[in-house]
Length: 76
Image (cartoon, rainbow, N blue to C red; front, side, top):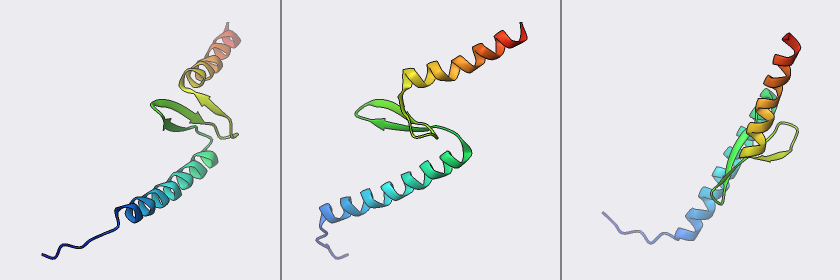
């Protein structure tokens, strides 16, 4: 088996390009479906909403619970 000297930085750039393309395809599909896309950045979770807003995990969970509360009030 031959030992090929591959430029690791080239492979990293290529992998980043592929991952970036896949992420944007997922983002567009989720936008069409009307669902949020979770993203991990620097150890924190953010959600990219279909309308383009970026929410922290806490904000997302608060907004997700809020419509349920308003639905309960309608039925009382």
